[in-house]
Amino acid sequence: MTIPSSSAPRVASLVHRTKSDLAYAYIRERIFTGELAPGQKLTLALLAELTGMSHMPIREATLRLEGEGLIHSTPHKEMRVAPLSRHDAQEVFQIRGALEGLSASLACARTDAALLDRLRATNGEFAAAQRVADHWEMGEANWRFHRLILDAAGSGQLANLLEGVWAKCRRFRLGYRLIPGRAAATVKEHDAVIAAFERGDEDAARTSMADHVARASHDLLSMLAADEEAEAAAGANP
Image (cartoon, rainbow, N blue to C red; front, side):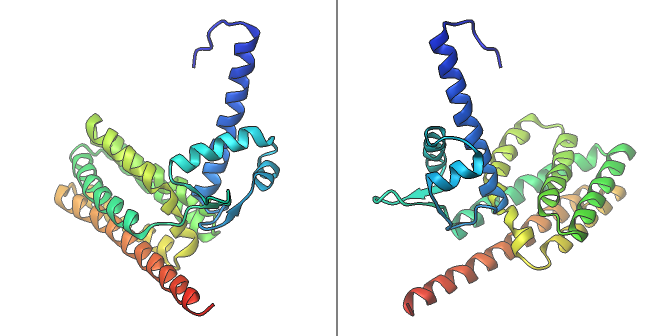
């Protein structure tokens, strides 16, 4: 980022925007990791205490997050973390499965020993995080695994499309925290992708990756459906 030379008032404005950006990034990440849980009530005081910032940058950050659909506000100004949408999850994972299957097929055709070593090591990092229930590192290791494959695919157009889909999927990393067995299944599903790469089987690489995304989607949608049923039952029996 290049900061233009300017008068004092413009510098003050830049600093103010930077605080708002920091607040936005911090709160957004807490929503993505589930530390601010779906449906949780938010207040300016709570977020100010969480970030160590004043109400002004917090207010601006929450407006941005509301525009992205991550925070919902009521007419009475109550704020809550937006619930996870089963419909949105289904759509985005269908698209992701198709794109990641293509990514795996293209990468398999270009694979080499170095890529295989990196994939094995990254899945090992995921497995190590899973053993100690480090949900943050599981999410990061999973992202690195899929990123390695996309980079190896060598398609800029595919990268642009898939990165946009990944951004929409970040909230659903909560599955590692909330869905029993999902993290352990991920290790095995990654192993199946790696095995296809080892054989140089492009069709199997595509199928293994698409199946991996589909299974993650199925588990997540089942969890969201159960949550919706529980909420409906609670509403019917106040």
